[in-house]
Image 1 (cartoon, rainbow, N blue to C red):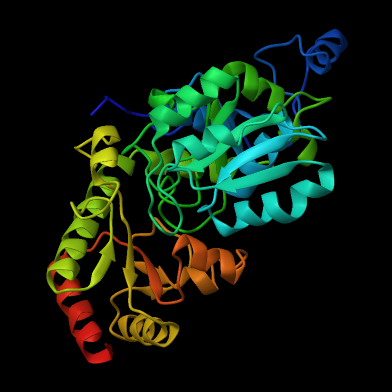
Image 2 (image 1 turned 120 degrees about the vertical axis):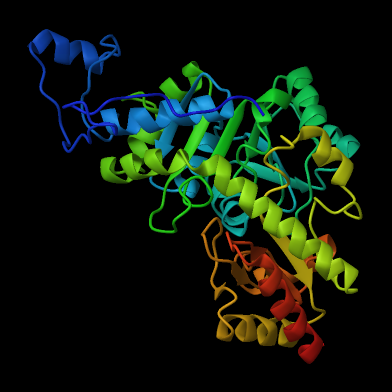
Length: 392
C-alpha cells in the first residue's frame, strides 16, 4: 500500500485538529490586494467562501494526496462535482463518451439535461475498448466512467482507457466513489477523479459532499471568478462539513479494509450456497483479474456487492426481512457503518429506461448491498442465508 495520511494542520491554539473557518467573507489589508484577488493575482488570500476557505482547502489537500493528483476542489455534493467538471470542459457542440452503466443521476444529467446545452453523450459498453475508440468524433471532449460501475460492479480497464484518451487528446474522467484507496485512477491515466464524499470518504451518512481531484490548472479553472463552474454554479461545501470529512478521512484505510473483508466473506458464502453473487473479489467475476491488477491488496475489493434474487417480489421480501432482523437498513447510498441495501432498478438507477436496464443486464431482482463494518459478519451471513432459503 502506498503510504497515505492526511496532511498535518494544527488548530489555532495548537489543537490536534485544524481550526474551522467560520466566515463567509474575508478581510483585505489593502484595496489593491482585493483588486488583485479578483484579477487572479493574489495567491494565498481568501476572498469569499464560495470561492475558497481554509477549512475546504485542508480537505482539498488531503483528497489530492489520497488520489495522487496535484490538486482538488470540493463541492456540496457528488453531482455538483460531476456537473461542474463536465460543464467546465464542454461547450455547445461537445460530445461525451460515457459508460452505459453509471449512477442514475449521472445518466440523467447526460441524457436529459446536457442536450439542452448542446452537449451530446454516447453511452457505450466501457469494457469494449474498440467500441469506445470507434465512438470518438472531432467533437469528443470526455471519456467518462466509474472505476467499478453502479450497480452492476463492472470494472473499467483504466489503463487502456487512459491510453485512448491520451492518444486522442481527451479528458478521462473517472468516478472512484466505489473504490477509494483500493484503486487510484490517476495512476492508470485518469486526468480527473471524482468522488461523492458523501459515501465511503466521509463514512457516517450525515452529510452531502463531492470532490474533483485533478491538475492544479483544472482545479484553478473551476474557481475562476469569471468562468469557473464551481464558482458560478455555487455548489460550495460548508466549512463545518469540510472539517468533519477531513477528520473522518483518517479512518478511511481501516474502514475500507473491513468493508472489503466483510463483503468478500459474504460473497463467497452466498456463491457457495448456490446464489448469484456479483463481487469483483470473487474469482468467478469476469473482471476479477483486471481489478486484481489495479487494487491495493491491503485494502481489497471494496464493500459493494450485488445479489440476484430473480424478481422484484423476492428482492422486496428479502430486504424487508433483513431489516426486520436488524441485519441492515433498507436505504440508498453506501459507505455507512451499517449494511445498506436497495433494489437499484427501482431506486438509484430508476432514471435509466427499463429497456436500457434490460440491455445492460440490470433486472428488478438485483439487490445492491453496501456491506457494513459488522464485527459478527459470520452471524450476519448465516441470517441472510436463512432468509434467502425461506424466500426463494
